[in-house]
Length: 441
Image (cartoon, rainbow, N blue to C red; front, top):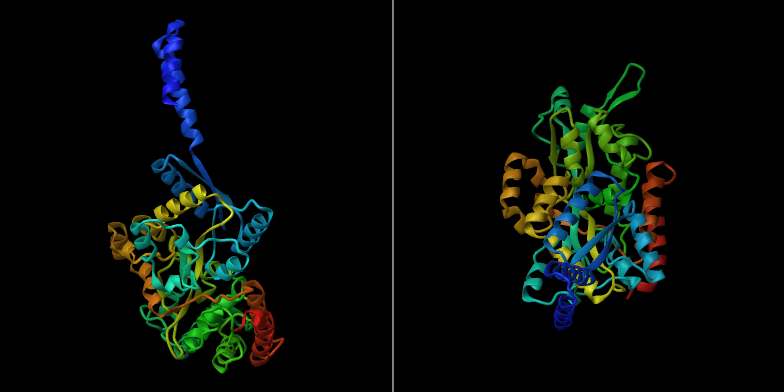
């Protein structure tokens, strides 16, 4: 190519073209060649277009492209995690999937069973790559590894936390610096924090655990604290009808029906942070990913704590992983790997945690100057990280959407009074056994 260009340059100069003009022609040819070598990768991302997180992702993509001129990343914002998964699976079937996607870590088995994604072991090429692959928080890798292969790379990951209003604690005669540490205390605190007006209407609830959107996830926080996991590591068995699981659901139901300290029926996931900010409720359970939102918008002092224990501490992990789709080209897959390595580097993992409230996915992110300064300034940001030592994998099985739907259906039936907790969990277990029978060994 260079010889041809030089030959062309000599010929055009003999014909009277100026050196400057020839240089411009060569420059244009060089630019065209560079463009031809650019690799474009598409990335499905589960957030509404124009949202605050979308702005953060756009800025990260721009920074990456500035540092990696040969790669272009095209974010495609695809609604909720559920919607993003459906679109990714449909695109895979049509033969035009994204190169990369951020999808629920809990959907790992679904993506494997559909033969859509690649294990990262098939992408890493150097010793440096392998060190990077082994450098994530172990608690997050439980929802990332199956059959000794790494299918997902943790990105925006979380646990469930207890948030409390310190001013309302103080008004109720409770120590504002001391959250409940076990279920008995949580019930007692909630009773003191629940207020009713002269007509008997509740004007302030003591506790709120959302039961729409992700009821299975919030329920895991109760089941794990009561000493029982909901599934096996292989995603082929569930334990919904175990006594400890039923007791955990009975406790959740009793909070509203017996103790009357929790809103009855179904509590909206999306409304729970807003109810807390409006002082309609004194304590809530929600994701650590809501920390930055509450920090920015709370007009009162609040605290953040690990989930109260029954038999033990515990919370499921949650959130999304990066997945690389196998129908993309090898060049795109390597570009995707480069982007994932870049965005999960210690410095950027720390900044993502600071900007969003998600937990930094790598232990070495805690050693960055940015994270050290932030942790000193805002110690509550480290509670989710500290809880990882007690964390378990988010509920995930083969046929995960169907099995999760069966569990959610049982939880709703118990919380609305349609069924007893025992019957609801026995029915959910029977459905799960039927769905998972082909995967049992």
